[in-house]
Image (cartoon, rainbow, N blue to C red):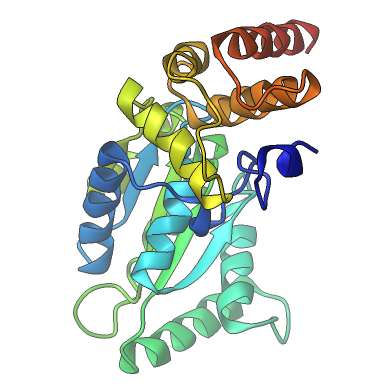
Length: 266
């Protein structure tokens, strides 16, 4: 709505997990390097955890894009182990010719072995993994690491979720993690860089937030990218509605008040 008024070619703060929306920030780059090292070298699976809205799904997509592996994104993980295995097998090897967990295992094993011989490994990204309640589902994922044609396992996986994930992991799987990465809130300077980076990607050629608006955004959002997106979007909408060329701390304050009202109403 406000894009044309502010000289933008796209909406800068829409929710997305597109790796192209990623803004390189020191804390995020460090996390990506740690995750990549273990996953790329077959040292074991990895876990990425942190508060809601920290940008975990986007980081996971970025890691997958940088690794260039055949990737399966599991968006609904609280499934019984046989069903989760069937889902992964269908995504990697295609639809099953017939029912049966044993046939799924053999089909997946043969597919992964063929890919490994061609020098390719698979990555399973399990989003919202903290929702897994059945220990057998975690064990099913761990057993997939037994598929090893030569050297490291033919596939690996990245578990993504809240801090609760680390409490739910059985020791048999937790001991095999190559990396455990906590993705926390952004520092104030990172919040500013994030907002400016998203604006630049949307075509901004002039400042659209005043200098005092950026620290106000950080404080109101607690440094969480999802909240930054929402507050920055609302602040720009308020600026547009009032015919202003940019948003200041006043518009951020009004946006934060509206955001708090939404939370109360929910």
